[in-house]
Amino acid sequence: MKKIIMLISILAVLSSCSNDNNNNNNNNNPIIEVPVPITSENTWKLADYTYTKAVSNQQLSAYTNGNPFTLININSNIVSLNGIYVASSLDIAFNTNTIGTYTIKSAATSGAESLLKYMDIQCSISNSSGNTAIYKSTDTNINATVTEVDGKFVVNIPNEVVLQRTFVNGLVDAPQTFTFRCNKVR
Image 1: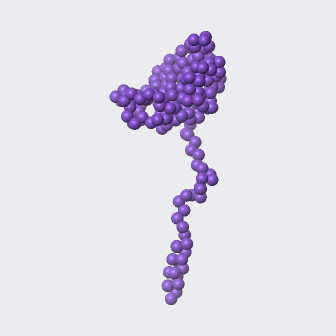
Image 2: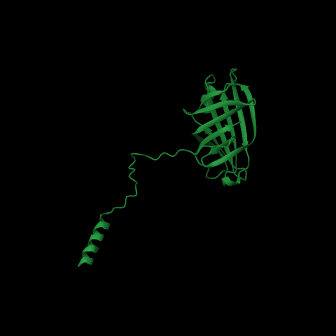
């Protein structure tokens, strides 16, 4: 009789337990993923793909209205660890030729508002066959910092910016968007 009472007690306890797989989250406390900081200089990330500068070029120029801008073009090393996207190139253009904080905008907004401290980004990715896709910044409120080291401008964008795909040349399944950030590229 004691065994039967014990068995019934155990069954009662087990049946009162529920399976709660929502970790008491109930969307009251959403989990916010903070991107892991990029620690290497001259490095940029597109989503989980990391690229490092192989060569770069900086040009100081002027719009047709005479207002200055800077263009930095950076090409990556070939990175076989990135799977299909083995290479990337990065164009960063910003109004003026000075250090400071710039707001990331589209190329159209940057060009139209050439007196404001705006920056636009164009990034391409390619596979081992040379097929490419191009991504560009849109109007955001995200800031980038421009400093100068050894006579070269250095751009830092620690917060993620969403780049929109604007062109595809044979790169099958290129995503519509990529998150982008960079660490002290020049």
